Image (cartoon, one colour):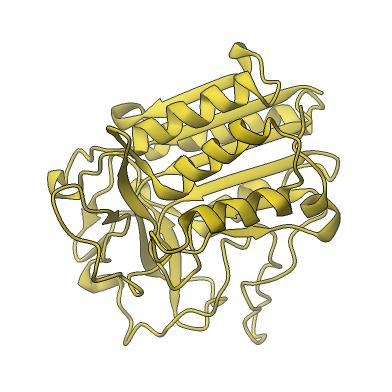
Amino acid sequence: MTKKAICVGINKFANYPQFALNGCVNDAKDMASLCKSLLGFKASEVTVLTDAQATKANIMAQLKAAVAAAKAGKIQYLLFSLSSHGTQMADKGGDEPDGMDEAFVPYDIAQKGSMWDPARIISDDEFHDLFQQLPESVLLEVYLDTCHSGSGLRGAEFGLNAPRPRYVAPPAGELQGPVKQHVVRGFAIDRPAPKAKAKAAPKDATSAQHHILWTGCKANQTSADAYFNGRYSGAFTYCFVKTMLATQNKLSRKAVIDKVRAELKGKFSQVPQLESNASNRQTAFAN
């Protein structure tokens, strides 16, 4: 099986030093190492983008090239991990009940007037539109260690090395009214496109047969940037990699997510999510 892994981690943001995180670069490196040491990826099949390398243009160029290769039959397994801030932007497709799209913050995030600059932010719609082009035979596995929304902060998490939420509030121009509480869902990779003059389609549509999504938290929670054993990581990524190394890829995805949730329980408020069909949940990872 020919593979491609693209691992992205962003601690620093060119235009917003106040957005700085600590563990995202470590997340990208740890995911890349896991791919090579345990999941059967060759070094040439793994690309790591960190900080200044992780502009929107570079991230999307890498993904588009991988999708093109998959369409040409050159890739059968595409793994994409992203550790950064999450944010929100006004929904322009009419498929969001609360009028807000989930979005992800690249290194070069910037505003255009009172809104996010579309050239400097990645919406979940952009990921959806790209990934839906993959042939049905290609296995897609996406890991998002970001926040989906700004609610659900855990007030008890404070102190010198306190976990920090990976969420950036959208600028005022993105807000089309009160932001409603999200239903529990993740990033809908394969929801149907909304039809003209039709009732908006829900964003929690069933995933494609071979598309798998891991998220660091529920849609109404935040993912933590936290301190573990002398270094920073995302709480989800740290526990995921730790679990995979400890079990040597002998567990199903469902068993892995159960162990990761158990590891986080009582220490962090987030509950990681796994979205896939039943058969993918019950099988081990590709190697």
